[in-house]
Length: 186
Image 1 (spheres, rainbow, N blue to C red):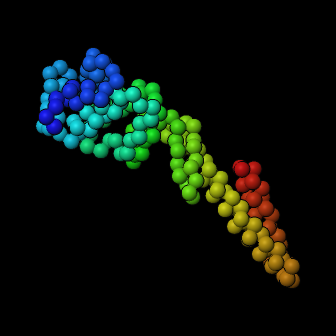
Image 2 (cartoon, rainbow, N blue to C red):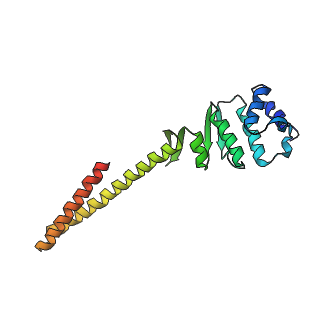
């Protein structure tokens, strides 16, 4: 808390001061503001200093849990821009969908105790899942129609009234046509 922003960052940095100042500038710490004491910084400013400290270390994997908490819009954009230019691996957990869309190029999800990896950005991931959900809905609709079809077959086999048989027969072929159309969608 008694160190300045620059001193705090330089303490663990693998890079020279000029490079650290450039990164701090991107995080909106410009000019003499790098000489502010860390102890007087707001929560959002402390988060940005923490980002700088982490990014300026010689590490291969950056793990971030809800990194957008405590950041105002300008700070969020600055952190986002900095992370876009980060060339090592970032494992990011966030509920901020816009932030994820901007940063991520691979999506990992855990579903039913299994890790699933999707190569693409968040919007592509959502689109793929939407299509998957639509196909699942179509499969469920086919099952319902096939169940109705079985019921109609049962009724047809027991029915003696010709008018009712004709109505059931038409209904049977309508449902059969719908099933065929749904199957073509898969």
